[in-house]
Image 1 (spheres, helix red, strand yellow):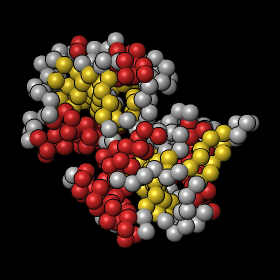
Image 2 (tube, rainbow, N blue to C red):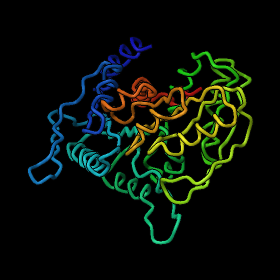
Image 3 (cartoon, one colour):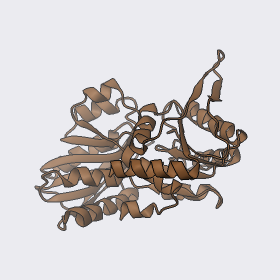
Image 4 (cartoon, rainbow, N blue to C red):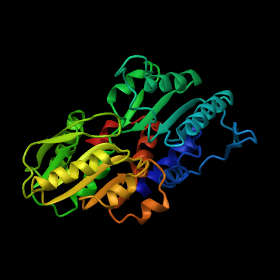
Length: 336
């Protein structure tokens, strides 16, 4: 598939006057991987800091009339990465790029998507307004925390929300699983878990996959009070499916609840492994066999040292999406 992709990208490059891919400092490794899959070079740019800490952006290539793609997740340090992204979009627009598409593997501030209490911002929408004000033409994201974020951008800025679960489905489908049950760690994620279950059934003919849900009651953000299980997991291999793992408190507690209820083995899959604070250690000492994440957020030596953590690459999916956008082909076909 990738050699085909490379040839097709070269052909498109010859005809279309080319796509250019640039990256900030958010996730250089992922951007290089994407370029490798597409057979194009990463655009030459300086994204650094001035002596006083201000962001310094310089593009060292002609982009006039080109379709430009910026790969930049807004992961920690969130505000630095977001500022880099905004200034890169602005720089490219002022340099007469034809279209600027931002590829945001991880969309920061996504959890503040509504007013849960009085006098708080709706930051997810405000970040969308900032990007729009800078003149973004299209946004590609992976597993947005909630789908409504697509509506925070106006109708002139289409948003593609790619399903990172596809990568996980391929990984778990090749495992030797017994009585598989897909578990959602909260009520909001049931749709995601259901899609994961349907993907396993469709791709690997695993038609006896069960579905379960954990209902959690939070005392305050970052802490979980108690958990109740809805569904049957006795003597089953469970896959907990979520969109992101932050401090891993919910996940590890969910794993121990499943073990208490008689689960055979517990796996976890999430698109974004933030693993802030004690997250990595919690996973290392948890009841899980394995925790699978995607590389939307750059890795660290601590993560590589964690035997229970497996990182899959999301670059082939993003490369194929960028190619399909550039060649004006359907993106939904990738998820059929």
